[in-house]
Image (cartoon, rainbow, N blue to C red):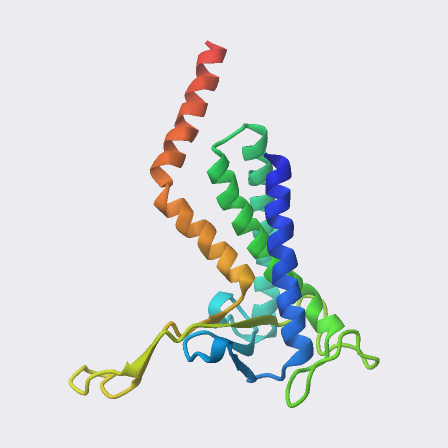
Length: 212
């Protein structure tokens, strides 16, 4: 299962980084491509200075704290994933953790290195390894987001308090492949939690019976 886990992580990172680098080196911030001419699947280039799905954790120190927290979290997930593989845990559970691990690494790469290897994308297309250096320092890079699915659009009815008449868009957040990998892994954990819990419990019971 170790080889399959490595393959999942490699493929997620490869696709994530190829798409991000393509967007960063061919589009300016705010540029859009309507896939198949649709209004519900859009490549919309934006950069996220904080957490997944465009959420923020303010300021330079906040960014640094978030990046360090991500690194520590990924180290913990990586240790746990290896433990699961060694204990021959449920294969689907390992797949879920591999997806979460890969997605977390994907966004850490942006945060750690994109500020060093790219210049800004404001009003111009960024260059990879620009002669004048990048736009930021280590761990202060911006995460590239591009997947936008405004499937439903309209306005809230006027009778709704606070939001009446405001624009309604579902799904509003712009995200990336790494975010998707994390989300798929988490959703699968929720859906199959009974199976995973039973498998883990059975494994622990089996160990206890061997030691008796």
